[in-house]
Length: 261
Image 1 (cartoon, helix red, strand yellow):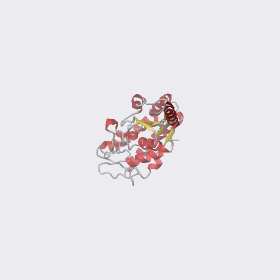
Image 2: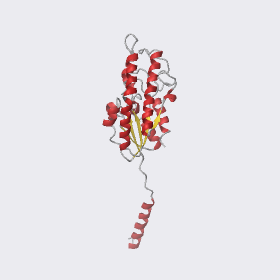
Image 3: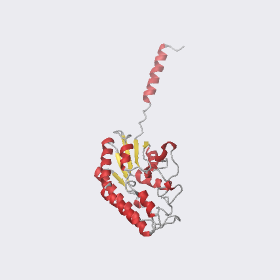
């Protein structure tokens, strides 16, 4: 039988051992906001309970969170516009969040419908009109929406580093898909529209004091029909079309990673 002194000694030793074990710091919190480019549409593998938002563990937020050891909450959702981010995605933001990535604006510009129109034969579609409408929206409407959203994000994630992500050009100048009819001029106009959107997103991000990630240069040579191709061309199912594949998401992850400091 142990003596009273022995029991007390063991208790003291146990207490010392417990207090000598360093406490593990909580993982830094990373919240991902945005549309299908941020959720991972195009990678073809999705988290079952993400439903129509089609979130993928192969998307850049998941890749980057793993690299920096962050606790990720991704609420990015396919089809999201600025208003959807504001209404449905800001709940996880608070003063404890360390990083926020935000990629939205393409759906506000109607890129999906513009691509669909421009993919038609010239006698069936009106690509020029669709592009003109999109560019007018980018110039006149989207900046105000972004300014308001970015201010709201800051009001909630008061100490977070916010990283705003832009969009790549979709085309290299070649259309290798048998069922689409993009002319060289149409592809040039579509790329110019992506550049215009990026310029407006970059300006709004700068005004808010946020970092901006421009993927344009990194995706040169890797757009639709590129080698290797980082952006899907016309695909089955069609929702995978004109979105970054797993390699493209890895390319985004490399760019965003540079800002996670």
